[in-house]
Length: 320
Ligand code: MTE
Image (cartoon, rainbow, N blue to C red):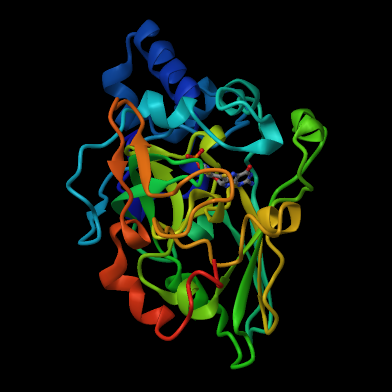
């Protein structure tokens, strides 16, 4: 009963793994674990401290995705201890240390701008938009490392359809949560917050574009962008904005954090492109975390078949 099928899951059922393990200890200690199903939720509630986080709860009943790679996945340890989440510090090990107390419940995502039906979504509502899938994607950071992650979520176009964008909505702007009290390390990060990102409308509608609520069979750990983030696998990792609170449809190309910070290094599109070097280093090769030898970086991170048609006729050296 503690592990619910994704389709049946409500946000209120989601409890951090530490709490979930404590419940089991509590029930075992009382010798009534087997009676749990009969006793029902009120017993669990009695045994459960106040919920403070979303991270680390099992999600099951996940559909498999045809977009998944069969490449070897990185370990959970790698993916949760080598992060970029500058609100929690700039070292790769900082987010795992500093994001543990990040409050991600309750949480709402406001969807607004040029849409017929603007609204706020609670996490309960987000989890019900579409069946949850496991999507095993390559994830290529602009710093020339890469990982393979079994993300969980659904194509972002499912959310787009609900709010009915107007024809003038040509772009989607995304904004992360920011609270300097919870994220004091962000003050020294050297970029402005809240973190912002954007996609062109056709990119946002592409089925590969994932609204992500979990990984490795569980809800997202805080350091990986709990409770909800984007994952855009043919673009450099910095497009995959974490801990989303606002999505705005608009006619103008939105500003993006790294472009604002260093405009001649980071463009709006940021498609993975081994032929366009970063001013400071080559993008031709990458190191998969956990491996010694570098491998060649693939155009569009290997997702060209699904995305190349969106860039027909565009000079990708100029539109980097
Ligand atoms: N989102 C926010 N809000 N803040 C950040 O600092 N870093 C980006 C992106 N999303 C970042 C963010 C960068 S640079 C990368 S490479 C990816 O998140 C890293 O995702 P991961 O830590 O899950 O691998």
